[in-house]
Image (cartoon, each protein chain N blue to C red):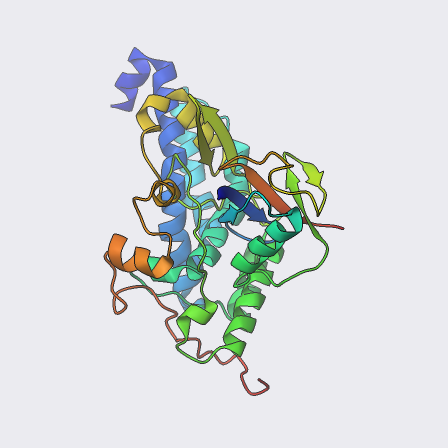
Length: 78
Length: 254
């Protein structure tokens, strides 16, 4: 398990995302949207950014070399 | 006392003021910002929290700094932006984790939200959609079903101020990560990071809730954390003060 700090565009707080190495960026989007659903309605066309760099939806956590307690941003845009 | 510190070491006096103004700001924003802009009934509000800060705190503080020949802190522009956002972001977040505190919360209704838009025209359009979503969640939930309109994931905390990561804006949270001696620390804002970097030995050993959960020292499940770790009981923890029974929550079309 790889804990990440997740920030969903439109939300008011950062949340912990418990990721697996094989999770794709699309799955991280889903996890964070689900965690924030009480405050932010579900949206399509979101992507993950790390250090301002947009990551491909099918890229895995391992391939993206995400480490524990890294920051990910989930932002609008295809 | 401040005069003596300034005479002895002006740079240290500046550092102390810069540090404690920022740290006090966060606590004051949560306590007084909640009270003035959310908990006081609309009919009894005489001014917004921001207006109060501008009139009674900022002007006085800048005058005091000038009197002692000190400068406004480097983060002053960040602080001024924070006046528009911070307590609103913490309030919306705290509402959705109200069981973790010992007092009840209220959903701002249409009239409150119109008032807040008038008082915070630069920031409220980014905050308001959160209350649309909370209202929709209550429409789909039965009254008193608090956990249907409540977060369950672990929230994150600043390694300096120990408050939740709610600085910046909903569009771009300002949290920032620092690697120091092989460990990662996260801060809600650049000022909190700067305070930490000046005296890391003072703060580095403290574990926030997230790090305690990850170390196995606290349960990751919210209800277990409330009961076993915080020592809160259902009858004590914070709830929606009306149990979701609001005139603007229409359940007739469910």
